Image 1 (cartoon, rainbow, N blue to C red):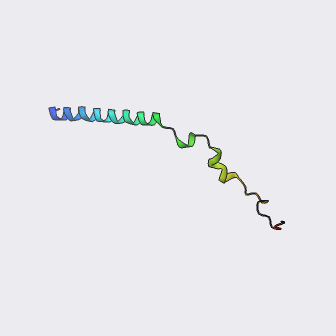
Image 2 (tube, rainbow, N blue to C red):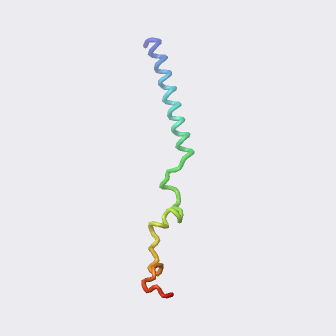
Image 3 (cartoon, one colour):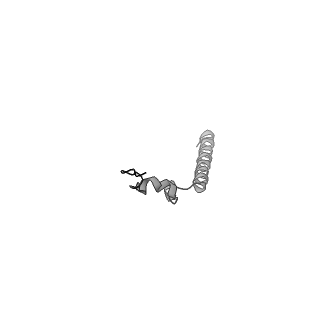
Length: 61
């Protein structure tokens, strides 16, 4: 193996090691969005039924 191939191989291994470390570091600091508990405000519009008494059809004054 020539000297230039050996130097290239060393730099390639170092580059991939750094990329793996950066990927691990970023993934350990973040959480998957699906793992968060759903806030009431987030699901309120989806689950809450409209109040049928809100609109008064007779309009008694």
